[in-house]
Picture 1: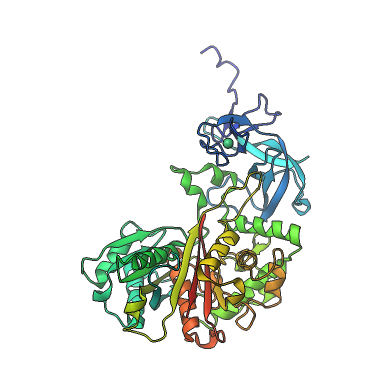
Picture 2: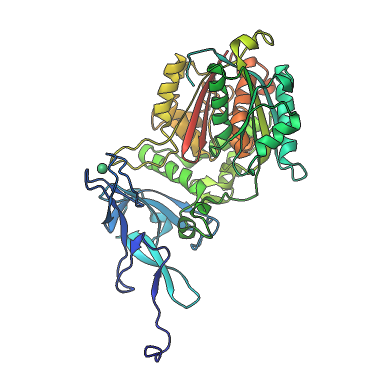
Length: 144
Length: 378
Ligand SMILES: [Zn+2]
């Protein structure tokens, strides 16, 4: 029990594994993990097995850009069943330079100031704590 | 289903009223609609050679239970699921079997009893809370709202354009004794109701509903024994989204692309459509669909609706029975209800909702991830 001396060490736990890479520190940015077709270069998110563009089977995991633009959005006045966000909140489709669309909640944003075309970047978001007191984290986007 | 082979006639249509019927079973609803449709067609259950049931949340085998209550004649019965477009797709299957000469007369029953409240899109992950649900991303009105906000940003459509869809729907619902809501709503009431997902307020969302629909289909030759004024299901076709490299898409399917194919098969154009039903689960559904069906130019759907073109007395009357918004949306039953209204319109039996001289009707029904378009003619 050598590491039990100084109280509990809090860890970051991803809300779901395989969708994004955790940053090394709570101040860092998560990195979205999508797919890239080795044959035609098309990107996808979430990951898939077969390229819709060229039919190639066997796509590579690819890290996606941290920045994108709001393609469209809504200000939601209520939350879907089972959600860990609070209403009202900004829900957006963010277009990344790889031409993939990411559905994400916008954070650190004035809800009246959200616009189509707005520059945004990914940020780490604490969604809840698990039974052991660890931060369960995921991603949101925020204005640049 | 195209326009080759025998022509398919919609011989009978029927509904169980849409609304909330906690005291009734799924079989009660389906049986009522089926009996009404067979009576309307002038046929008995012994004439039905195959059964199809559109349903979504209803349990396994629900279609077989409903048809078994009508009789035990040995006919094949199949449950069909395409979310909110289930009974539209089931009607295509029935029509295709008739065209192929496999069956001569089929009945499609659509049925649903739905829990109250917002549909849970997040359950698909299986076993507890899904990632998208937990993240706040699985918001069904949000999908329509984001299409609307994109339309507002690109084309300058306004909140009141979307709200007007619901005002018109409820005005029509007041004229439909089968509708879940038969109360008028003013533009102010619609716009001032609780915000669900901007620009969609509560009164711009369809309700969850209980209800059933039934449609009897047969070959043109058989129909001659029963009617001198047949209404044809001329074309019914479905589609799923088409991948376009580098393009963000939110829609449930390639409606504009499919509309062109459907018009071509029917030998008609958008200008020939006299009355239409579209999937107005949320108000942007109508604004976006009038463009994709070619009733107005891209980007002009909001103004087109706002100026009254989709009213019963307008250029392209739409959702004359109140649509999903006011008639109600028991998912599995909706497609059959759309067919029912178009048939009543084309027969001249729509009473106070009647569109003058309606001869060509069009139906747009969207499921989660798929669409179905149909054209009916006299
Ligand atoms: Zn490829």
